[in-house]
Amino acid sequence: MHSRLSWFPAVLAVLLAGCFPYSCNRTESRLLLPADSLARAWSEELPVDTLEVLMVPELPEMRYPRTLAFAPDGSLWISDTGDHQLVRIDHAGEVAVTELDTLEYPYLVGFRDGHPAVLSPAAGRIVGLSGTLDVPMPSDLPERVLQYAAVSDTSIWVKVAAEGFEGHLSRLAEDGSTLQRFALEAPFWRWAGPLRLQDGHPVSLSGYRPQVYTFEAGLDSLALFGFDSPMLPRSRAFVLGAANQPPLLTPSAAYLGDALFVINVRPGWLRVEVYDADGRLMQILVEPDPAFGKEFYPTDIAVKAGEDGTAEIAVTITEPDPGVRRYRARLR
Image (cartoon, rainbow, N blue to C red; front, side):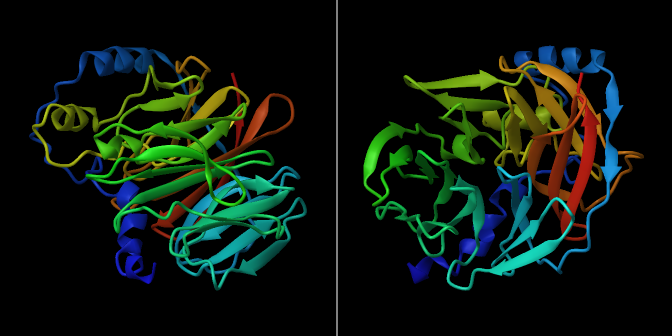
């Protein structure tokens, strides 16, 4: 297992690799796939709403805030894969730090008994902080592999994918044995993206194309209709084999009820889009005074219901300054 550690920090950046809107050749083709053209037309008809900025309490210095999630009690948990720790912000704004010395590169993957569960690919385990969950990851993984997990009180799901490897989405028992498995067809980059649970079912997010994959009776895909990005022409070029690397379109998304809140990567500002259960864009949310910035890397998003038709949105940022941003949105 230790042989994986030398390359693992690079894998943490897989979803931040590729071509960003400000880093690509601006003379390349502007042609879109037909579905992307229809989506762009829909997006251009919607108004853009401004997010309200909320105060964030003073947090300990974090090197790489990678994932975050709201617990059942409403507190916000953040994982720092640079310092191997979890940070908690409670209702009163009090901050607490949990060191995870033996669980390097922790990723929040859900909650068990109200306590956070983390995936440590370096340790090859999914561990619950309540002490009731300690599940080994599959042992047949190649050296370079994408690993994701999603945990609830009743289930444990893992997604693994790599080039030249038969990737799979599996539901695991508490001892790590496989209870159910779905094969993930090539190309493996389709499966680069977080794993979520929606109504008890796993949903695989895709960082490189505007779609999600659902697994109930079998594998199905859902296109995000209305998703528009300056990187869609390069995405078309990659799909058609005319580019070597796919552009990152979205690093993460989170559910609130049936609505999916998606980070749509922009060069310098936060843009969050809200999609309904059918994958249709309902609302566009942008932080105040968006401005171009060469280095702006959001990594994860969490959402919880507020009062009077509002939602609270939290986002982890690694550049320009590692930390957390919080917003309030009035939903349409």
